[in-house]
Amino acid sequence: MKRFSLELLYHIVGIGSASGLFYADGSVFIASDNAGYLYEFRTKDQTLSKIKLFDSQTLENIPKKHKPDFEAVAQKDGKLYLFGSGSTDKRNAVSVVDVKTKEITNQDLSDLYAEMRHVSKIDADNFNLEGAFATDDAWFFFQRGNGSGGNNGIFKIIGSLGKFSKVNYLPMELPKIKHVTTSFTDAILIDDTIWFLATAEDTNSTYEDGEVLGSLIGKIDFETMQVVFSEQITDKQKFEGLALYSKSDNEISFFLCEDNDTDGMESGIFLLKMSY
Image (cartoon, rainbow, N blue to C red; front, side, top):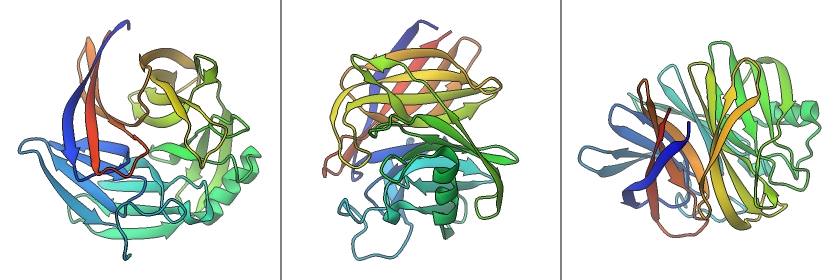
């Protein structure tokens, strides 16, 4: 896998700080880390709509100390799960959206996140979830190691989010860009392969942003949980959302979104094509 192309496909006005993606049936569902909406962008007519996730006087450009920090989007049984990063006490919730009915439920995950910190021995200042997916009997979460501890890793949750029976944690080593080890920003499961994004950001804080040194895409074998491939795709952008667009025998394509860490209400959806 040596060849790739990356292009800005859609410039969307009305979304700030895009942080997670899911694509299905011509719609790109987009999470923002500082908004109380799930956005739906229809590619056919390029229209944008909003699904309100909770009641609040402020639902966009929510101040940093109050924002829900949705950093992971996962799909299971026709529902989208938007997970807070857990990096502060106000970021411990999941909003669940029924894609067809648009019905919303919200759930506090403080007990689960506390158990994840306990099992992994990652303290509150370093805990930061930035990717998730579900299988039939488990949930997988990706810990972003951009804090002082450098804790990249994968959590496996056996059971449901509210009634989990076991939590496992596997530390992961990721490649460097320049002098900085990259850290997970999203991950999805396709067949027997985990595809992930990772970014190098020159900071030792899960709260404060740093200089972006680039992003890469990589593969983890789902059985062995070993990184088997990585490729740097940019030296200046912080890609945080990854969604499968199409797959053939010799090419795979993804939608990516970029978090520009500003208050501007515009976001880009990029198309990444990779040839086998």
